[in-house]
Image (cartoon, rainbow, N blue to C red; front, top):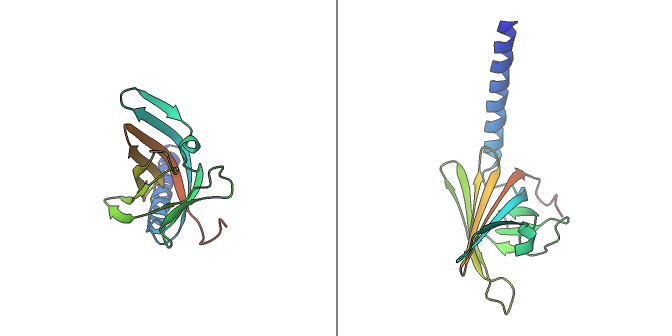
Length: 151
């Protein structure tokens, strides 16, 4: 019985490595990613941090990272219908880094600069965004999708 436990553990480790490597190879910035924003944290200066719903600050809860057209756009399921442009995409270590800026709502001083770091091994992401005396951090997960399958 002891030997079968070791065999099972070894087999699971090999499957985990194969799955991780296969997933990592797909996160190369060539295929679009379907992403879900799980949690947001806001900090206003002066003030303290508070949790928030990402859609309450204009980020679609479900969105597509479209590398071909250099944009992030909402899926059909998202309540927020805003799209933003990706200005830069770069691999750094084990992360795919995206960067951009958004002017926000016309007539309101709410523009932000943002950065999104996506783990090429797990698909987990962190978005950090900053504006005038406010910062946002959003956590979530991405996976590869077929081109235009979200339309």
